[in-house]
Image (cartoon, rainbow, N blue to C red; front, side):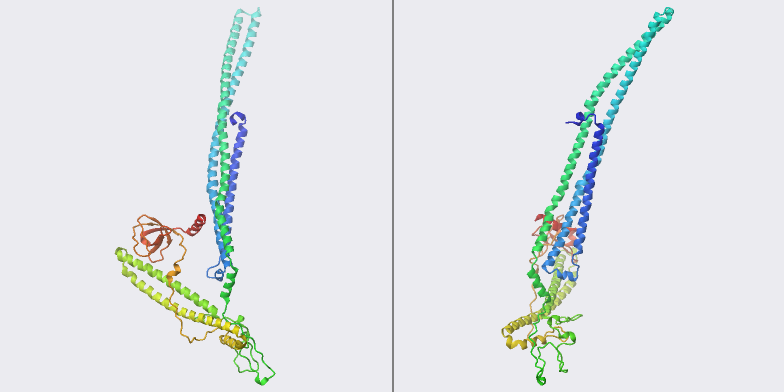
Length: 559
């Protein structure tokens, strides 16, 4: 099956068909290009959507994400961001593997097609020239034969006429012979031209045209194969991201399954629990005995009969039950004594945790400076060891102040926790002896409310409990490995002999997991088990701005 033998006379149709093939290829390129634009637009819209619903920093929304349902939603937003990234990957791969490659191929294909059809037209023009030469030789032969016949007839006429002189007859005879010779020469020329044309025509239709058409056929078949491969690539680009998209969807499902309604309900209790006891029963006030009428201390309403008695609540809003207590506005006391017991305990605990974090931060800086001082002592050319003494002393003072603050707040926290446990025990006893102790419990509950509706603790007569400082080392034992944020190259050899440092060789490439925080040290990793600090001046750091996104994608692929 060859175009050269089967389609020897379809030059024009082949030219149209191959042009149509190139048009199809360009149409496919345009289709893929529009698909990449759609993917980019879709990814951008997904990212904007995810960003739109992300919690704003330092806002109330950020606090709401302690609930499992809100955290699941946040995880969904983050996964949608990764999901959008995969659509960007689809766009990039289609652009590089299909659009770019096919565009270059189309240009090459056009040049090749132009060359083949130029050769075809040249062959057609050659055979047409040979045909014209044959036709001219044929017409000349025909003309010379007719002239020879006319000359022969004229000679015979002159020879038969007795009135014609012998000289005229001879002249006519010579003319007839000349014409006859010219006819013979034209015949020979025509015969030669005919043989040459037949040879050229045979070569044209059995050699030149089949060869040219065969090249055109091979070119067209390569185009067909190429567009088929591009369609496979089109599908494969999508298929490659399906596992990662599946991971994103699995993470969304996992986040949804992590929602714990019981835990969220408990968090609501922790967030809003006041720690107060519910009000007791209102005692019956007997108005049938005006002289003995008194207002019970457990009553939550004001007496109109006794204008001298001090009311338990000031103003109209003070006659409400515990759930409607108004909160103090403005900055409260340092020990949060204006808050209800449970809320006060939470605030004190938060303050203790914040102070512990500050202490740990200061200790990290002190440790880093200590390491730097050791390096300076061993290598005086790197710096003066005495230059960091002032800063070390300052950090030591800061740590001591923070520890005193921690002890102070832990003392208040222990006091509140002790009173809450006592109140819980009292509540349990009141349940056992409700009939005998109702009035006493109610009176105790009201005495804890200040005139403005807030809660004030009584001064404890017991010795304050002192809680020892927390061991901060345990706080970081179970930390997740830090992600890689870049790479670095060791400029010099460094022997990490101190705890927390790591030895490196000159020219060695390592991963950066923590930047220099201003203390002159950079945290690096060689492998999963080897990491530590090296002097920042010993390495050349190459940070990757998109390291976090890349690290997360690689982590999902490895899973």
